[in-house]
Image 1: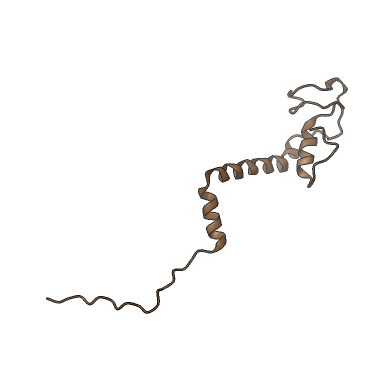
Image 2: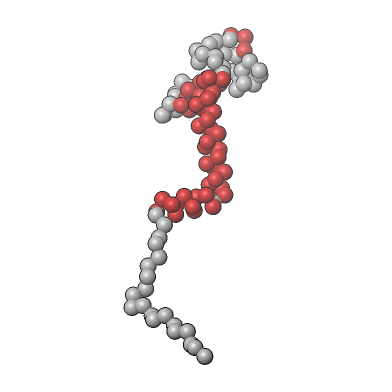
Length: 106
């Protein structure tokens, strides 16, 4: 009978390669469900701000005096403000700027 020789114990333990900090952070972020939901909502909002001006081409200063303080409709998806301006372009303009616009009716 031959006895298999056991490997000799090492003097120093071998360190396992650790993943990078960014890889570990990305893995943890992807596993967190609420963080992924928030990231999805953020992506939808950024996409709406970037694509919105190409889809809804009404100028921000267009005034419809008959539509003062009206609710949402096909002509004005977000309704109108006190100055009878539609809120859609103003909201997308305010969202696209770095700081919220004080004159935005939204």
